[in-house]
Length: 156
Image (cartoon, rainbow, N blue to C red):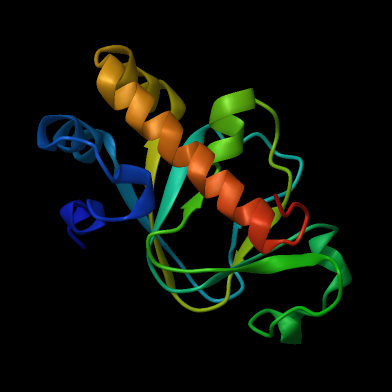
């Protein structure tokens, strides 16, 4: 199994002290997905924060059944695709903030390894440490801001 500690320098955890990071590591679980595997399905509740350990995923809106099986590992074209994500990128962070169902589908392009931290466990770590809470929420805000800028939706 990969080492969760290798994620310490990734955007979600920048500025998180060693003790708090170790608490996240204790509650994180690891899972692998094969190419074409759906990691998050649009409209379904996902009560976990996910961090990509390895591989590539694609994020898109719309019905997965519209795409043929032989296109599972092909890059989707058109305006339904938001983009690709790679090692260290975070998934599911919006549902941790607003408790709403997933706003997009995430599918493995290659073999993907994912670290998952359940919402309850994630909140428990943050609730006990205000500094870590501020750092992690600020990091999530930076991640979301970067995604908006990259999507061309906002340019301030």
